[in-house]
Image (cartoon, rainbow, N blue to C red; front, side, top):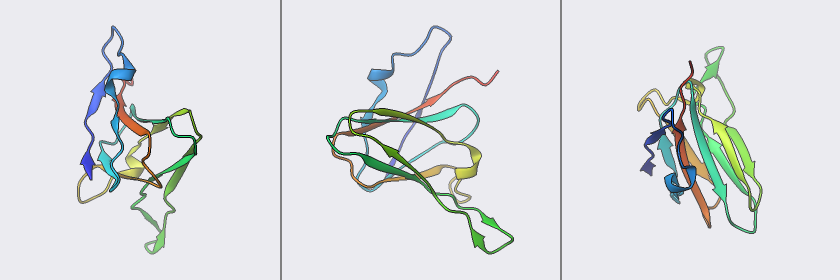
Length: 113
């Protein structure tokens, strides 16, 4: 599992293409919070699913379902990584992928005010 570092968007802008790294086959983790976005670029000829683990429960024992996002072949998706996905043990979101062939990711933090 790779720990993805956020790229902060400065006022002059950020060249996004230079920020991508290969998605890790064992999954990744990243920071959470307001203004944090996971960018998933799928250059494969097949769609891939990204799963964000949701560690919370409702009523003390009902698990909250994980968030899954399907990234179509040849597309790029932006996925907000809110505090909902904060792993209490690490303070970071746990990410997994159904496949990593030609999948690259970047974590972007934008100002919220």
